[in-house]
Length: 460
Image (tube, rainbow, N blue to C red; front, side):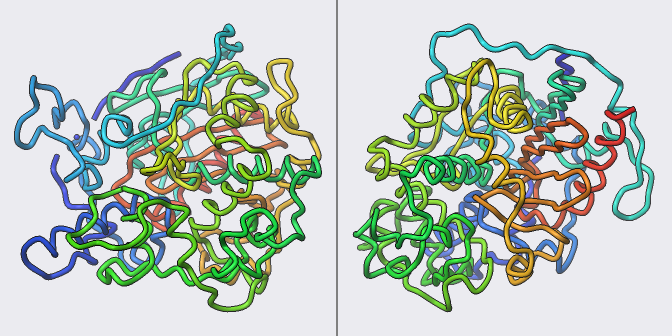
């Protein structure tokens, strides 16, 4: 069932509003736009979300139907979304469904095979009631609306039991996944480790000698995979000397400031980052680790990330639609934040994980790789990452592991993107959203309640 709903207004981005520089002229505009772009990358915006709950627009006021973005010929004035405003809110709600109209991308081909089956067994899960993180009653449908969800697909035992779309999203619409991208990169690397093509105990420089003078010069591959490598990568959105600005400019997320002399692609930018701390001491979430891991994967295989995605995953899954990934000026994919795909194809991917790596009559990952990921990482090291809103979690192969009684694990991206796998409940949930607040800390306590309610409901 494809239940299509809609809901939209111009509204300053709450998650970065407090960081807006108090300057005038071109410099102020550049810093503000870059701060907004940073929010989109998949970098953790945790502290602002936890410190004070922002005032959010009512979901029904920020639907694309109401806003009318890009709906006239040509779009004029407030209706236009382009690189100057696509990372502001609510323009972001349009941008996440239309990235390749704004940025260069590389296609991830599905191939010519008939799409694999997604049998339907609809259940009234939208009416399922549970208590939210404040102890107040809420239903799944209300959670859907409250969290600015664009698409939600729930699978149980291989069947689609609930499917809903909103905000002009359709079953065939690709959605920007932000840091869910990291989890694809992590599994690629884990499979190559299993195949003996990557040594997790080797130094990064075995595969990427260009990083010898960087933070990764004396770092093991395993520290990259689990984000326990020590790298100076600051995220101060009002200070253009911090590294997050260099990442934004080098990747091409926004136009570079006048007189810019820095790196003009992601790989050159990575070479500039230096060590800060002790490798292996603790988990610290850094998008740049995913870019390095993707570089290692391509070096070990001699193939572009998008080609590997198509050949090894997308075509074998029997997806319905092509996917695509944002690329920089020399075609480097953003392997930590740039993937775009449909909810139904992501549900196929999640079901493959639940089944231990096989789907559509194809072995896509070895079961040992899935098991290694699902077992999680070092929970004590994870505590050092400052993510108290993920209690009991760990991080392994660029996946978040809940360590709950059901053995659940998930891929997650800012603004509310998820592939959630619950083996014990035989459930997979895909949630694609365009929430005003980027950081997961603002919504994750409610998300955990929803996962538990859905797991209980499908078991009935």
